[in-house]
Image (cartoon, one colour):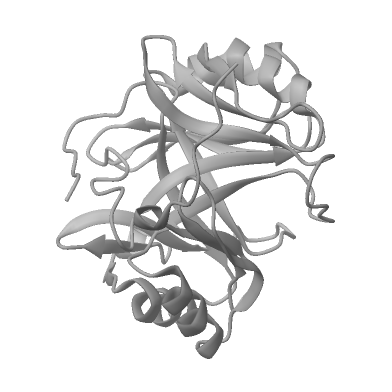
Length: 269
């Protein structure tokens, strides 16, 4: 059971949460799907709910901001040593800060922005809350990837903000995909997909959160029983058996069973 109790390195996707109209309904849905225990947070937290797996923080569920029209979404947050400094960097290289940095009580400091291609993301400077304490197991997030038609523009932007290095694993014709790693190196921490190639989608640029499951087929069936819509899958891949879902309130997320990998992973170029 991979767990963590210290701050994530800057640039790591460190947290995911969904913003929905009905947090109680989302609580019931995801608890039934992933086995989450969803705790209430203090009243001053504005109705934000903390989802736990085996006593460790896995994800958040929150209400949409008041007086802001937006769809229900899952948001990916990137770790920052200093949120204000990262916000300045975001604007200096063509991003837009939608919610300037602010303190979330004693838990941390954050802001929300869009990249130059239009995909929204969050940035989290941890204090008492480091972000995800559990990952890469059933019911916890395991991967985050950007879907955008502005493939090269997005790569340049995130490299400028977080110093990412990229490895291309697509074939350059039917599929363009790059994994990214932190400046310190190590294993990839996320990916960027060129939405102009392969399976076409009408979705705007977005960060897709992936949750690990023990059985993709069972997860898709259970999600549909609970009122979700299966958008894709189950499909086999060199990374696992996977599927994409639209939740009860319209939020899109993905599931994958990495133990069911089929074929050899592409060779990075």
